[in-house]
Image 1: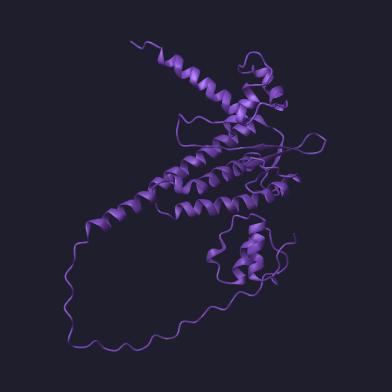
Image 2 (image 1 turned 45 degrees about the horizontal axis):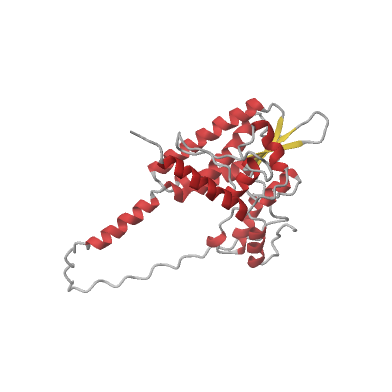
Length: 298
């Protein structure tokens, strides 16, 4: 799809932003110039910007009519009803919930890892993505800081620290990194890797120099959390998990595969899926709870 120019209509800019899955909130844009300006700043614009709209001049203030001599006495202060206070308290609690800012905090963490890798590797001037990453990082960081909430600034600091730690770990492990990009959308993934996305879960992608060979890439899925006891979970349905890792039709002993067999078994075709898997699960569940009921805990 061709890049926008100053001759497009506003509706066409909106369609482009949606189709390219750009992280742009255009709900507050007032004119064509604002669309062109933000698209140009992230490299999604061709040609010159249109002329900025002239600012409306504020007309001189009208002469105020002097107030009438007789003044109405001020109304007595009324105590607000208890119900309204309860409603306000609920609203405050909602705004103080970290889950409401999960996306922006995750963006800071992911962009931060990419940003710090390029800085640690001293690739700022050589990278094709550094300026764009810094721009997106600053936008998300500023949005959080502008909320003016102490708990949110504390969470922001944690995300940035986590990003720095992860960047150091990746730089230590992979010595031949030559570029990094934030691949939060299909279009950014394809633009950086020149490969189809295929629902790739990578938040950032590392680009390597393979000593004369064609460049290779490694996707990294970042799952930074606040707790110390969080447990990661394989993101799949229970049936797919059991089908791929635990059970294979025709096997005499339905047990968990050893580590050196998991990759092979995950690639093998398994006819035991869907309702059959659920039937097996239900049978195991019944046996399990039956055994538990017989255990003497005294």
